[in-house]
Image 1 (cartoon, one colour):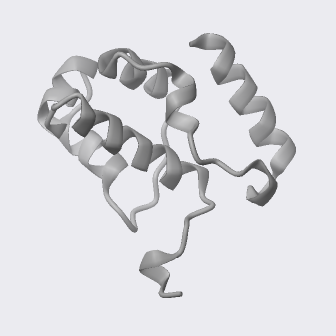
Image 2 (spheres, rainbow, N blue to C red):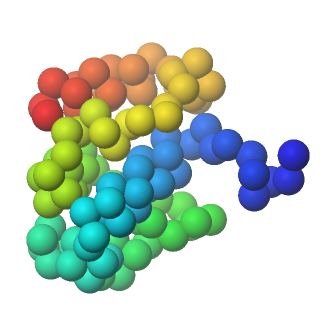
Amino acid sequence: MRNAEKKSTDIYDIIASNIKKNRKKANLTQAQLADLTEYSHEFIRRIEAPNVKKYFSIYTLVQIAKALNIKMADLFVGIDIINLKDKERWIKFIFFCIKIK
């Protein structure tokens, strides 16, 4: 399997992919999502960009989920807990986010 086809186990990449998928489903551009969240277009672009280190806060995810009119849990679709590094920390993080929805 080529690297491009390999499924990511990086939680940031998976969340970024879910943001992009839900943004497109809502028929929003990156610029429109940026306006709705009050983040810069550059920030949204970098979150969605492949092969770029991503770091964003829970607050950022809350703002994006609200702007996309989705549940926080929708941003975590496809995350395989078993393959995540530092599993215990991410399990707590995910359950915390699901409670926020």
